[in-house]
Amino acid sequence: MKIMVINPNTSESMTEHIRKEANKIKRFDTELTVICPSKGPETIESAYDEAHAIPPTLELVKKANQEGYDAVILACFSDPGLEAAKEISKIPVVGIEESTLHVAAMLGARFSIMTPRETRIPMRTEHVHIRGLGHFLASVRSLDLSVAETDRYPEKTKQRVFEVAQKAVEEDGAEVIILGCAGMAGYAPELEAKLNIKVLDPTAVALKIAEAMVDLGLTHSKRAMFAFPPEKVFK
Image 1: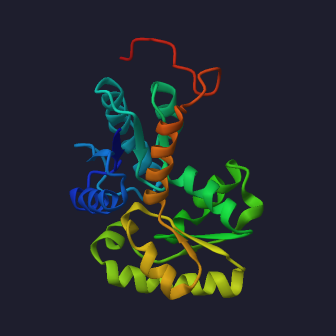
Image 2: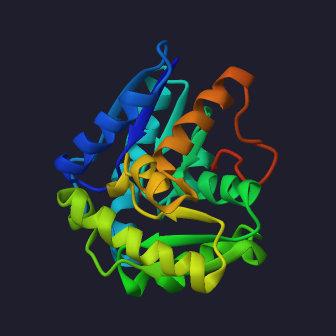
């Protein structure tokens, strides 16, 4: 099967990081293309960044459909443009945030999200409630790092996650920890061993869900919510 993994920001470093980690865990018969737009924000750390990232990301979703891919993964924990991507796509589009929140709710009674910046805590909380999973949320805690730092400084980031996640477990009752940024791809196994608690890498979760959806022949219902949009001219 062919899967396109889209990093919606323009960071080549983060795209290569995601490519490296995804290729470690993909199935032997899965062909991955890991790509980022040529235009847009270098990192996504606000609703403003998301808004600018969505149009070029949607163009890549169209490209995946045109070139015979079997699934698309949006490798940003904000899932920018996810609903629009599902509308325009005949193949499954898997957001790393949406998929991981649902998996976390299957693995424990309470989960906590590690988000790079404190200003993103309200948005993360809102997304959990939109998915109907509010009663599973123990907390959203900030690492006080930039998205770029989570990619650039893995050891510093892992140490910070360890410290913050310990507090989430001890003070918030978290049973599952979610690494809330694609810049932390591949960090989960080491952290899970140190914390002795389940730690989810959303990029890995989304990849395995995408593979399973292709195997099962599943894609989005076109009955209403994700129906193809009416054709029109954009000026």
